[in-house]
Length: 63
Image (cartoon, rainbow, N blue to C red; front, side):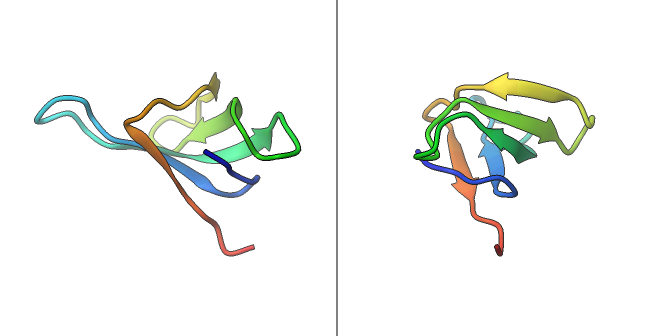
């Protein structure tokens, strides 16, 4: 997985009925765009450092 600042991280729910979570990537730790990412979640404005799992994907921003 590779991302850039401004891209969105989307995490799908693991169970039926779970909500989808998304957030803006505000910091990328490695020059090659690999995790971890600092993400500002859209539902809470909370920021967290995340290593995305297989239930996540990147939606590129229009840079």
